[in-house]
Image: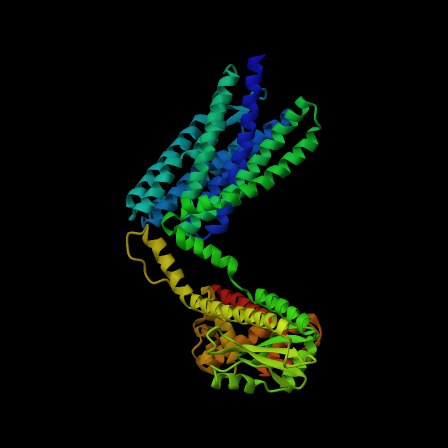
Length: 633
């Protein structure tokens, strides 16, 4: 009785572990494809994980089917993964050696031949009984029997895996830095994981049916535990290849992904498999208990990950903990344009309630003059007020007398007051409030609250302007930071100094800003004549049409990108699908003012600025597509 219970527990544990390895391999494959697709090492490792997934998918499925014919089908399906594991081993080891600048035509030929041999072996498994044949389809583990040439495939399997291991050891020796050697060492130690995960299912074909079930299940259990750990270690080492982010970012991203993805999924799997049995034993409704347990586990795991974040920061960042903590706090405290608008709207609503008025708005200055930053009440009336009054003298008075008081000025039924920096040396914008009955005086009990709200608006505007300056500075240095990260990644492995990296303007983080600048000087100006967009292959190809004139070529390219956004049918100023095209046409090609465009399109100026950013983004996206087509052709 006790033996039966122990065997049942071993079977259950193996089933859970096989499913967990399948989940882990799938999750790690998705992660590598997402972050390391540009790396040959990442692509080869993804194929290796896919082969392991096929084997374990067959293992998990076989335990759920009862038909002998279905079992045979899935047992042969496992050989899709088993057959190609040796070839992928050579492929991965060759890619690792290539990273260290050890390129071999013979090794590449060996990789191609190994894929050919693996494909031939798979055909023999599917179509003949030479490699494997019908075998034992009973407990504890259904398995096929070895065929006449099974030993040939076994020799091929071991020869390629050993060759791959030797190649990786060579790659480790060739690494230049201690960090790269350490990662190669991780790969060398864990490199056997996929082979160890696949080989038992191949080895089962040679085992006698008389082998102890408990011993067999114990061996598989111990092997599965080691394989799950080594797959994660391999993924950790491979994640650095082809990734140009700092090491700390890669490490933190992978750890958080494992905690929120494979770990949570594996925990839910354990609950789905074990809780129904426990519920039945306790006389509880199994489905209901399982549902609540799974939901509770998902919620608690997310909470636990958030709770463990400080510990993860200390574990991953260590020397940079103070700076990283500051950056994370900065991320939560930054004022986005939407945050600023919402905050100012709240301030204006409080002001309107205190002063018992219906309309109030804040305007700021930009390249296009005054525009509404936030409003309370009738936005259309605020726009008409801006269009019909020149408010620049109010700001100019403040600039000529920065140390004086900041009073309200009466302008046609509205009270206008400059909003200044905390040092009172510059104006940030204007607060415009509908004139209240006793304006410009207010009661002593109300004045303190009004001044406090105005100060809050000034602080928010000043902080937003400072943050925008930080963003502009970051945009300027981001290309250099990216180039440094690329060189840093390359120099960890290669044995020569890399040549300058040729980058297309479309790969630069500042590409959208360059598009906006070029459009703003569409008919001429330094932002067009000296634009980095002149380096586009698309522009170089178009110059032939204009006797080598690069500026006319760039203007034509921009025009074609705009026209590519032209909707079908007759142009309309009010149809939603025409909005982005109309903004580009009116603003940049016809040179209309933003206030005039807002009137023609029947939208507010604040909404128009948001839509203009979206329109420029679409032009940038279209230019990327056009550049990629031009480069490929």
